[in-house]
Amino acid sequence: MSERVINILITSFPRILGQGILVTIPLTVISFSLALVIAVICAMIQIADIKGLKQIVRFYIWIIRGTPLLVQLYLVYFGLPDLGIMLPAFPCAIAVFALNEGAYCAETVRAAIEAVPKGQMEAGYCVGMSYTQIMCRIVLPQAFRTAFPPLSNSLISMVKDTSLAANITVMEMFMETQRVAGRTYEHLALYSEVALIYLMFCTVITWLQRMGERKLNAMNGGEVIRA
Amino acid sequence: MLEVSGLRKAFEGNEILKGVDLSISKGDVLTVLGPSGGGKTTLLRCLNYLEQADAGTMVFQGKRMDMPTLSRKEIAAYRRHTAFVFQSFNLFANKTALRNVMEGLIVARKMPRAEAEERAEAALERVGLRDKKDAYPSQLSGGQQQRVAIARAVAGEPDVIFFDEPTSALDPELIGGVLDVIQHLAEDGMTMIVVTHEINFARHVSTKVLFMDEGRALACMPAGPFFEEQKLERIQTFLRSLDRKDE
Ligand SMILES: Nc1ncnc2c1ncn2[C@@H]1O[C@H](COP(=O)(O)OP(=O)(O)OP(=O)(O)O)[C@@H](O)[C@H]1O
Ligand SMILES: [Mg+2]
Image (cartoon, rainbow over all chains, first blue to last red; front, side, top):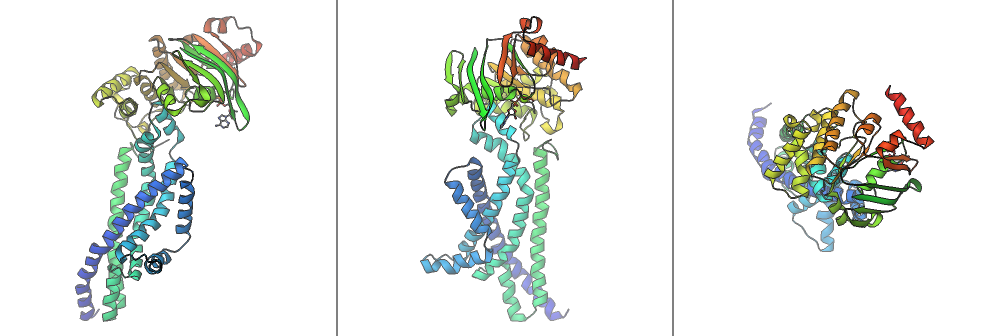
């Protein structure tokens, strides 16, 4: 590797990582938190079988899962202005990522709730608790344990998917890399560099996931949470 | 204290309970016997409104209730006077033994935490599991789980406890411990309705027996005459078949 390349890598590293910390991570954290809220609400609506709302949720999940994320980004950022709805790039990206991930996570959460044995609900009723009380205190905590690994998976996917936001002018890590690469023509070195930074982020998440699982297991009395 | 008449329940047009009557007084232990599939579990679930009956009237502590149309609020109020012990225990998997017992007291009965804890410990003591109070259900044997479930039922100081085959999911060597606990409750005067296939236990603790077959109560009578002077051919055959199995 020439000295020039090494110099480019060294000077670009803090800039790329900086955009990662300032844009990619906030974009991921905010979008994913919103996605979780959407997911739990959509799952609860389906489980509680609320007429009308349930159809709307099914429709939303159908649309989101049946269309590419990139197309959704373009639709909202470039398409909606035709209707007079103009959003700045960053909020636009947050909205699309949250809605997109929310639909997938909704299915994860719904499956996890359905995996909690019916007897848990019945036992709750029999000690006098209400539906909402049982949901919040008994069923959701157990469902969360089941949903945790697939949700971590979704989070890892999302970190990488945020690179698509470059397409709608969000200045995140990948776009920063593209810029430097465009100036210096050191594509191999620079894209390898940004790949490594993504890998670093995802490694940290994997590590957090393992810690989280250990903690959740302890809160359920060991590996096997039900016979 | 609890009187039910004309209880009917069908699943998808298939009638499982075909008009069941029963009544118990305070301190009674009513055992429900009968062949598999006769509707015993369904009966018990209807009595605690886990299934909605299609027809039937219940009089509980002088209050008359129409079973199919009872409101959610009335059901909740009624359930504060009852408890249910399941065949498969159904302990809350994410709570320790102590928390399992406390949960209903704190959340449903709005009892202060300290008082609930004290009562829960006393209930666990009663089933001989105070030393397991910090164990999660997955760390307990089936017999221990069922005893915690009984402690959970007792802690709410119910007026009546329903047991659905409390020992049939247990290994044979664990059955005795659970039956002992139930027998102690009976001796303390607890009112109970117990579905069971343990015929010796039934002979021992029942004050009354209900015999269910194909959705009908063939008999609902005091235990003495039921076992000693049984006239119905169908029931005699059933009892004899169980006695034979016991030997
Ligand atoms: N939720 C349900 N949906 C459809 N059919 C049901 C349902 N619950 C029970 N049944 C049917 O009702 C009949 C009576 O069942 P139930 O469980 O009450 O019998 P049981 O007397 O408790 O039998 P066992 O001694 O085997 O426990 C069975 O034929 C069963 O298939
Ligand atoms: Mg049964």
